[in-house]
Image (cartoon, rainbow, N blue to C red; front, side):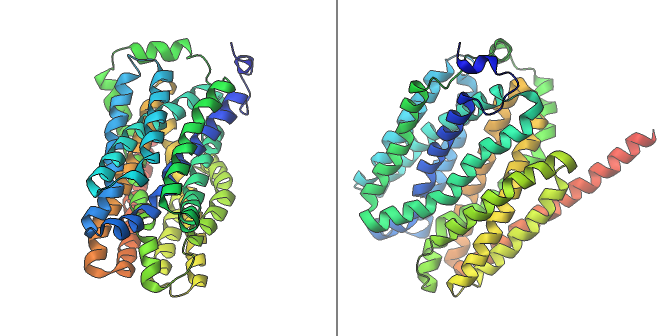
Length: 403
């Protein structure tokens, strides 16, 4: 029994803190490479725009497929074995990026990383949601998710800085070390608690098709909205360095630093607003702010406008992402949070992959500025879809109360 076993009502237990730190390191190893990779691939192998987009999209598609397999494996294999294998695979493939002698080898390593990342990013949040007190689920998920938001905001800036100072080989080794460090951290601090007996029974039980359909019906909307937002994030990650080169903007990595500032400030506030008032008060203004951010980014000719765009992007992204995840978890039975977490991260990766490929094609035809205006249009679609859903839900609730 771990020390945390008797802390039934506490959120900030040793396990929660260490697992949250582990999630930060896992996503940091991903985010440090995502933004520098397209520029490195272009300089090293000089491929076309479609091949450059595969650097991001193949990883994301591999992670999505891996999470489906991980959900099945969790019913037959110990979760610790899955977690450590996934972390080891992610670390090894990342460390070898700099040794890839061809674009084909690099893409293979990206697929392997996606498999390992998909396994680890399914198991870690599942363990966390099982140890958060039920009465503090929204708060706990918000703080745990803050670790990934910080990594998503700081990782690209750190990656660009490391590559600029020491080269891509050093960056790939740093990313691999970040993922590998999670294993001794979890083992040395004994941060993984025993699997609760109820969760064991739920994992081993055969899935109920009717219950699965009811769950999917209640979580498809936040998953779809999260995917739309991730499309815009894919465009930022994959092409902002190339956009900066086109516009002669020095230190474009500062976008991610200022983005991180508002993510850190807004996430706790947006989580409390979601708990008290529901998703509408967070998602609607968040979508408007993201539209404004991407539009400003498309017109950026100097660092001042780029920084304002970054601050607004962090404000919108930091509001919407945790609300979408909390919405999905609240719509899912606690023993099936693994499925909800898997769908949430899959929707993120699917959106990033689509953003990289579809908006990359737009950039090839129209240029990067027009691409970011198209990305703003994606958030306009986000807003329209949610307003239709919100209006229909309010009418449905009114009809139900009138009967």
